[in-house]
Image (cartoon, rainbow, N blue to C red; front, side, top):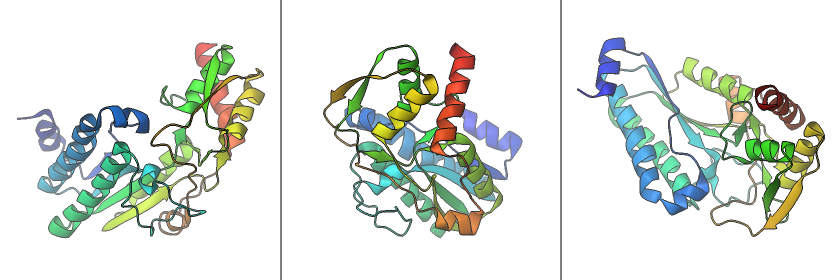
Length: 252
């Protein structure tokens, strides 16, 4: 028997929250098959175990990357998202589609959550919030891709966790929700916030825009607010302040 078979048979979980994935847009362009194995096959395996063991509710981590180069001011779950611009985004969209199939065929309750650029203490070291805080704090050079006008809906980890728990507690038949802050921050503004809270000036090297990157993300969270009671509370300024405080306590 596999490890997962043993876990499901021994513990008989009634709820599954599937957050495991291979993340990152740029690395997925270099190794698409790795992302397919981890994100498409991995998600399908988890849904299959959940089906076989009559799990009551499954929550799956998706991504705002599925929106690709959407021109909408606010990204809505009602949009057509079948035009991903990276293998990573394609694998996350695939997870949403296989979830819908499992619900239709096996009546499994499944919710996919589209996370918008999650950051905060103990964040991924390959993402800009952690990298910029570390490098600016240490006086190292940072790379800024493009002119600084690209914008992201950075979402503090506490708000994301609140949304995840709410989705676990509310078993909808088959839904997709955005979990974001609901407003964007440009790259230049973001660097300025890190400078303010580290007390250090950034040494910036301007680089060309990267393939697979999208110009902006901005979440419409009205559906999550209505059906989950989700309400993001941490501003970008406060989130960066908390993250810098954590970094200083941990590595200072």
